[in-house]
Image (cartoon, rainbow, N blue to C red):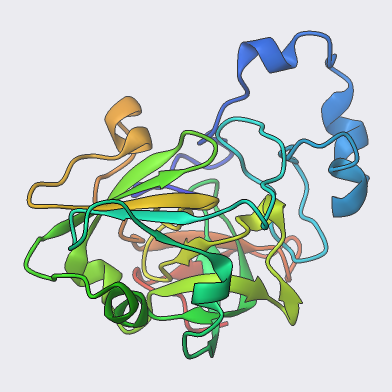
Length: 248
């Protein structure tokens, strides 16, 4: 995931940081060994662990706090402020929503990107399912790893915004946000929150965790004109005009 302003060449911005208590005892050599393992092997100890190298989906695994992979059988999505208090939606409920496929590129502030064939549903379908009111202007998104963000309702209802449950012909993996994540192609990746557990509709938004904590992140998260290093094209630098990347 990523930010609203590109860093200088060669700069790496750690959007999500390991909790110190988890780092204790893991050792400095973990990153290299983890990067070489498959997603299943990375999860063999029950934890979602970030990587420094692209995986088989040509994406890095990013995480704010390392957590055990969520249990889909116990997962639910809480929705507040949009109708009945404490509405809870199960995966079986989401399975009833009309599914769509969308190819879009995930662009990170670290200057890398990867194109993914996502599968999911539009926010309008979720709002219709729960009978949500749409006069409130913002949505707070809370995630299982304590990450949170604020999204304008108009951005949530954008025709290219997707709630994703699958990628590249497979069910979404915990490393990439299962059971539910956002995909916002015109925004840097940090706006595409993963491991979503709660949506709260509010009349006033906020900065979100990363924009509130790191000044080089913008609240809007709009992709700016600059350069990109797509993982599908190693050693290539490509200029981008800003907004969703559609040229490749």
